[in-house]
Length: 139
Image (cartoon, rainbow, N blue to C red; front, side, top):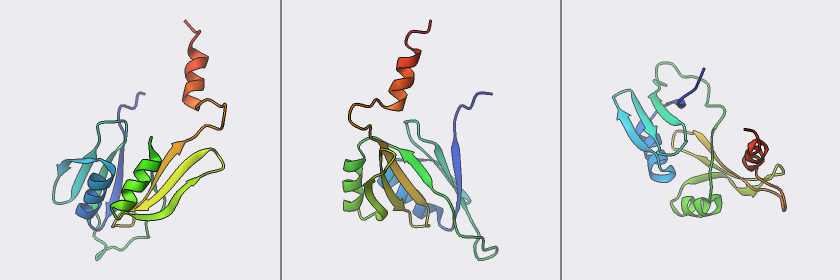
């Protein structure tokens, strides 16, 4: 099996509001819009996002659990920009014990979004660089 793409489907009360959040603040663009769903994409390796209309008036469900997480570069600059744009920050930019920076956001429908950037301790290589180095002599 080879996975060629990933889509995260999220059921929300107002897909248009979530679409505005992801397009205006996180660089997605609308690929498809129907009465019941909006599909968002980016040109980089981010998963596509499918925003599906939920009919909460007919069948209320449990509150959203979990979150969408994006590994990014330039998180400090992104944090400053997002705050300036008025995005709701749920967890301010912070260095985590595991060596990464994180920033928590929430969209108008309550979707928790986490941005994360790995930060190597002094003298350490990024895990991806370690894998590249390990495979360098294998031919």
